[in-house]
Image (cartoon, rainbow over all chains, first blue to last red; front, side):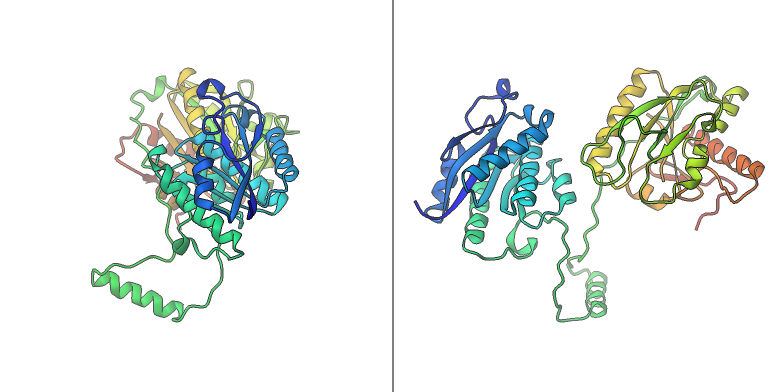
Length: 355
Length: 74
């Protein structure tokens, strides 16, 4: 067979290893296409050949990510692969995450084009949009395998275009999920003219297409108010990356897909200045808060109010995370975990400070 | 879980759906002002925390900004 050499990555299920009971399967591979790869090969005809199928268990992947990616890169190199296809993962968070990470790793380490497919609400897209890899194209799919044929078709179209040496155009034309990469082009009309055209359309009730879509986030349900504040246990939380001096838990400030959070004890402190802390916030001047962390964790004031009986008790630890340049999905996950912990600990209200 | 969210970025907090938002002073020091005397800074932090606790005890129907006295809103 002729055509460019392709590696197809999938999770254990689609690769034919087994279902959920095999989610712990380590990295493996076999020659040629498997599962949906066979249909994909049909669609690719002679222009591309799936020479190897690599897979990893949905649970094994996130728990051994570095090791897995190293092995997958080796499989790709050993087979002289020229392009990688991953998934399609549909709405599966674990499979989607693995596909996006494999594509990111391959495109940055081996400088190869990668094509994948995920549903538009797959949480793995947060990573895809953060990475902004120019050579990774994720196509939107339906939520489940009923969308397999459509997914494979759009992914195959992209593989064929790239295999022929063509460049992929803008997301709106080619149909892939935008990475958020801004590419300069020449417009026929100036920005002022386009803005007035848009305004006139809007005023006349005609349709218009925004040039800058604003992402709308989920509506957060309103939590009921605290009825008896004087009986309440209040917890302090801070996203400025306030950590004990020496940063013993290795918090980072900056791009990161998995966001840590931790509780640090404050029960013996009357003020944050009774201990020494660092502030890991790469986007601001940290001097004020390092010198006086009460600016981020207002413990000194909470202790006074606790003594005055405004509320019953300051929870003995404060919840710390570093929100700087964090993926929204990572912070949402961290927030949900924190609240579960707070509820288990009898916290009734939170004072959260962000920078 | 009711959360009193102190931040100087109140518009962003509203847009991202936080329901009880308390205007903080500035990004590097939301709960006070190092430019004031220690006493005034302390008093300002009291107003901010007091407002946050009041917000926790208040019914709201959606994103609502509470402005502590002494925190200027631009």
